[in-house]
Image (cartoon, rainbow, N blue to C red):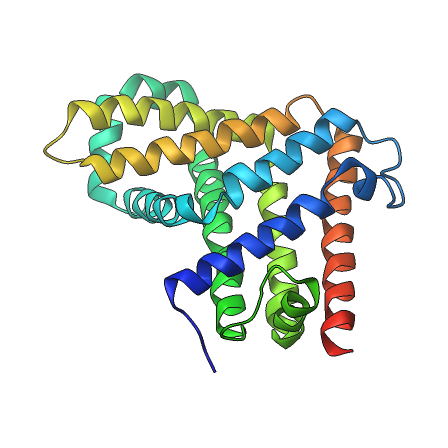
Length: 246
């Protein structure tokens, strides 16, 4: 029986956040091969990024989802993009040949964010009405009921999102575009409404926090982090499937 009632979906998200908080502790991350000496501070940054930007508390989730949907509409609207470029022409010229790549990187990052939200809907549809979602065995049954292709797609999409954020130099240009765009949007209220501004501001915050994680990492540490997220997610999925099918 599918259960998509808002309160049930909130319960699913809160349970999932509890698992995220546990699997991205320093102790858990450093038990994986290659991550034994990964900087504690960077692990905490990744954990905070998950819990505050990618999966904030359920009460903030609807607003965040709406903001990103509005940002996606702006990025895919030729009319609105032309309004921004027409006013922020100096920024465009500074970016030069990097502009198409920077826009593509930004869209890929925000697409990746929207894509990982699919899991929430699937988890809610796999849930058991009236169950205590904070019990590991109950939540494990939800994960075990998700088709393998869907759960593995989520894992690969999550790694893809982090890989997009790891493209620091290009996303710094994307950040510059967004900062200029927000100034333009504020000056053109007849074209851009509050939803557009909220979406752009949310996207900018996601980029800033993601860049903060990767900006100080060496290329070797970045690759370790990407492999580590993949390992950690694979391990969690496997353990939950085993528990849920027991």
